[in-house]
Length: 340
Image (cartoon, rainbow, N blue to C red; front, side, top):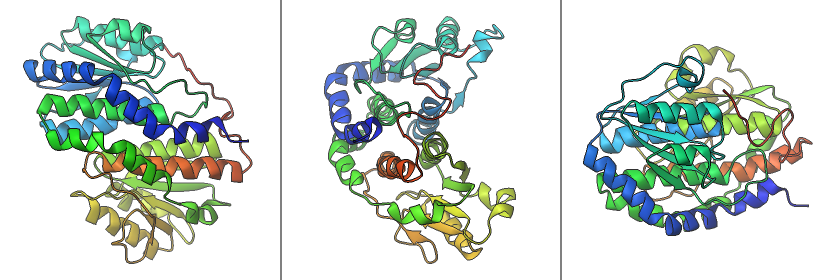
């Protein structure tokens, strides 16, 4: 029987096309208002996979708009009741359910503090959607698997579309329109070569830089959630410091390299860890020691990392079943987590 997780991974291309078609006017309106206020800073409000979306958008906004982005802890409002001075700023609140009280409280506080607030959510009419200036329904459809997949991808796509309208980036808009087809190709990339390297291991490293570090965070979380494998995400630069002490013969490493300015350093790190005896894999053909993995570039530096996570999702669902886990029902987890 096909898992819900697998079904939802295979829906990613269609979900992306649906989002761009249905939410086009809302995405453009949010982008125009951002351009109008010209924010000096952007803050993000999120937890879990949604916080990885926020990290992705942090790099994208800083690289494309030149505006610094900071993550705000939801408990600043929900637990501590602090008021932030956010006049002239923008805030992105990200939650697929739109129901977590701490996310809603922080979005309320951001708006009260003067920020233009934008929500990315899969639940129209949710408390979060009602709390913000622009509520964007990512239109991913029901996600039954506990582990988020299509909602993660759709949330990033929505954020990138807002950014493209904000900055007037036609190349990015074109790349977003082409994503459904690129995601179909990414689903066909076979990463099963990693299965043997991960089997019997207690831990692994996932590396990335720039927007790809957000994908590394997401990959590490999914390995923990679905497959019972401890995984840690690191910058391909940071791993060469203290974490390097853990790398020995057979230690698994997955380096997420994309065709941008950080590709050379990411590949260099993967090769260096392979030279230390690590079982290193990298999404690049430039590797000299690490094992290359097939990948489907999405045609733009800000969309390429998303194609990698689609390929990984297809791998990790199969890997979870290989290890005897039910990918739809991770231990101790539930679909909606309402924290305060």
